[in-house]
Length: 364
Image (cartoon, rainbow, N blue to C red; front, side):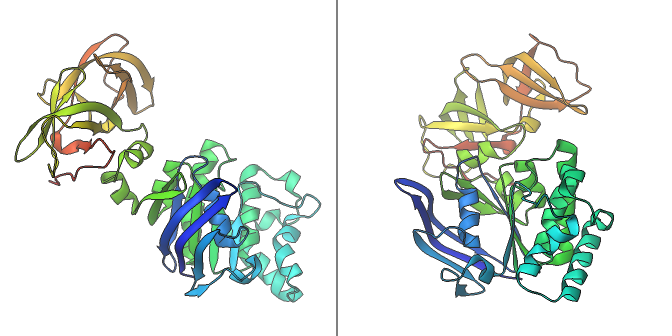
């Protein structure tokens, strides 16, 4: 296993800055997931750690030693890419053994390593097949097996499931979780898929525009987003964000007047907030219910998406441009143009100031 430290890491391509002052410590045996939108610098960060790109500034330390002078092969890392990158003229056994053969390892050692990895991945019966004879999921397992046989100190995984269909992605997520548990190796996993990020990570790094927005466990980042970007990026369907202004401040909550004219409460610490300040109220779709409570607003159903056990109901509010999404039970019958009152508990609300920074929520 390997601990990794990134210190003041920057990477520029001409005038374009891809990474901006990345400081991050990754512990031995950790499954760290880097998540963010396309173009935020995720893959560039992984390539700098691997040694495929040199940083413009900063340092990469592996087990306490700077790795900047080391080639990718000397860093003890193995990288699995979005594309499987298998040699079409070689069978599975030869593809998995290729790196060890290039390193001139003994034949018996190569054979044993390939068989161990094939058994771990459940692909023993595929060893004599060519890549064209494999499904997408099988090819991805071979690519992972090729990395495993090298027995690296550090696995780097660059969106490895993005080319697979939805059902296979779920299955392969389980496989990665099991592999991490069995191999006990440090893994750094890059994805733009928040479901992968939330289900796999022991710790999440949310990246945006080349910089780190927030680091924490999936529960910490989801329950206490630091700013508007993190709040809106994590969660499916996304958090509802409604513009408003502070109407009143009490000991237990802040009252917010929305563009619709409704006044609702958010159980957050006031800090330096003052009446009249512009804020954004956040409510996750699963926190909204149909009811007659005081803490809510009127809305008209626009679109209903049936999701099996649940329904995503998108409704329009007076004076609000974007629809509000409520995740309701599939048994609740709602239709286009129905008039609803959507309510939520003050403790389930989030509040963000004019700069997009989160107010501290009161925990009950």
